[in-house]
Image 1: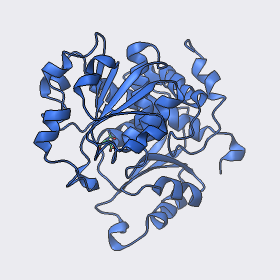
Image 2: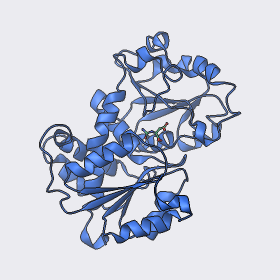
Image 3: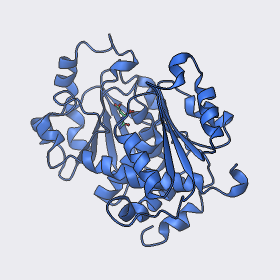
Image 4: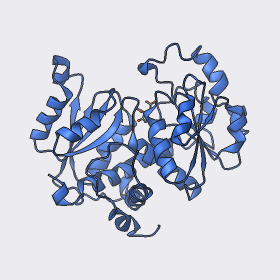
Length: 322
Ligand code: NCD
């Protein structure tokens, strides 16, 4: 699955115009993205852009929630492939005057754009737009539901570190209940044969996650020496977490990773975090910036992975396009 052209070959198995989630993506589809991203990576950072790939196409950003990494890397990805990017800004847009998300998106579609990248606080927003619009819809996070490009860049980063995904043991730690990153990673990691451990207090990691094929653990210390990847997640305070943990300080004491906990990881194990990090809560600064941390690789890999997703979805056969 390596070498020039491998991505293009794998891309033949991709027929989706939308990327709404990783639930239901096959192993082949996931590798189609990862292989193409690897092929595009030299063009993502510094190297010559590939402006012919999406020349003349336009991508609209509809972000109803804050974003740093996702929005910036989607924009860079689109531009590196030659597409124009238009940005709908929530603070100055008409949703504050009562316009619905669908009406906003329909008007932006009427400008002749080819894809909408949407982030919303509400689960199902991307799927709703995919049913309503004729253009490609890429989910950049819908409530606590899915954040597929984050999971794909996380898998890319794990593959970069270990050379494989199958059989890796990946612990996802923290606010699983409210995390779209956890859900998207769980589906994607299961599809490629990795083992997923969900770790946190029972209020944030309900037993029912076992039904989705994950191990459920309510203590961090016993799993530290038993995993290849430790992925920390932020407490999603914006999604009604109040009352589910005694205090942030107690959460950090039980589930935060400091130098002493990091030292108990296996040789070669990596520490991941999608950002934004609350330093001193999920990770102490020395661990966040330490030798095991790949958090900046994750952010950087987001550009190539989003280039791959844009190219695959916008390059879907004309008859399945608009
Ligand atoms: C995540 C998100 O928005 O879901 N951030 C990101 O995209 N890198 C995680 C988070 O906000 O905690």
